[in-house]
Amino acid sequence: MVESKVLVRDCQFGASCTLREHGWHGLRIAFFAIFPFMVRLRFVILPCMLSMLLMGCNHRAADNVVSSPGHALKGGVLQNSPVLHVLGTLQDGGAPHMGCDRPCCRNLFLRPATDRKVVSLGISDETEAGGELAMFEATPDVASQLHALQSAAGLTDVLPSIFLTHAHIGHYAGLMNLGREVLGAAGVQVYAMPRFRAFLESNGPWDQLVSLGNVELNSLQADSLVQVTKRVQARPILVPHRDEYSETVGYRILGPNRSVLFIPDINKWGLWDRDLAKELALVDRAYLDATFFDASEVGNRDMSEIPHPFMVETMALLSELNASERAKIQFIHLNHTNPCLSDTSVAYRQVLEAGFQVARMHDEYPL
Image (tube, rainbow, N blue to C red; front, side, top):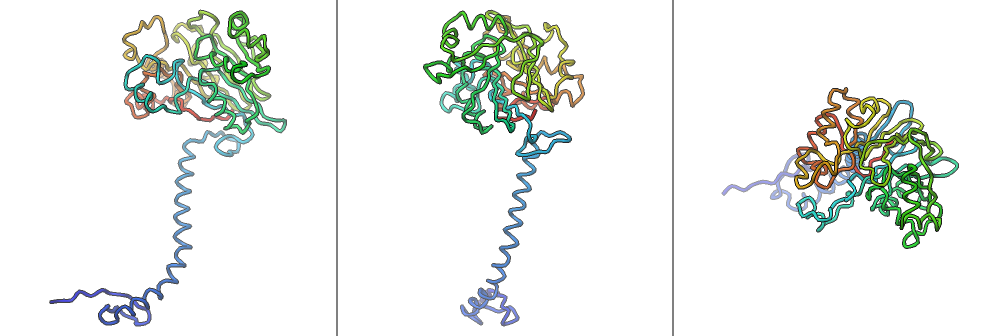
């Protein structure tokens, strides 16, 4: 019978030896001989592992940082710049959607998702004089969206001014939370087009917000600049839509360094009296109506009652633009049926491969 030998390198013996030759005493000698080297190695191995981890984190962060020449970065945003925050990306009904028993809603009824909020943008602007907040739209999700905006900006005691696009429920119904039943706010500045303002002043429960001083209404004028914060302005732009109770506008939002186009609702681009490509040339980023990916989503609804440009139509319309112009597009206001709500869908990949983007909750864009 041949014995197997376990080799141990021992600096005192100067050669390889077996347990049979030196027994456990040899093992103890070997352990204490290399222990100091193991202790010293930890000062090499641990820093190396930490460096690799940090390199990975920095690489990941670099993919998500938006920067421009001449502006220092701090925490992923342009230092000292106002910041635009994506607070919601969904169509008015949100998700899960009332009456929906499709898989896209069924799973969300069982396990609600925190990143499914109705379309809204926020602005935070901090200067030495203090901090200001603004929200574009007052959605049914306004409570969580205001909390997210205040938390991201570190301005938990500041209430925002509110800029409305039109009188469809997903875009203004959140105003009810400013009343005595919920927040009991005082003097929140709300901006709306003239017909929309008259609607709010003349119809309950909105007129009570005015009479109790929860809100102060301000009239907008199409194509006229309005101050959003000290360093941010907005220009309301009329767009064709179902104007049952109000006008419908989008906004061109202007910061000190960058500008953004926000059009969450429009009937069809061909009905607009402006050229979309020319409007894109005026801004650095554009959040555009992406309610439906294509006509196959809502086979049981009359599309003439809920007209919107399909995402495939918008991509075809802009397909001849260069890559940098197409990359400005952030599709927003997605219906609960839109397959682009899943970043693993074929439709989502199709959007990215065409050079466009889908807006994501919690994204921040320095202005």
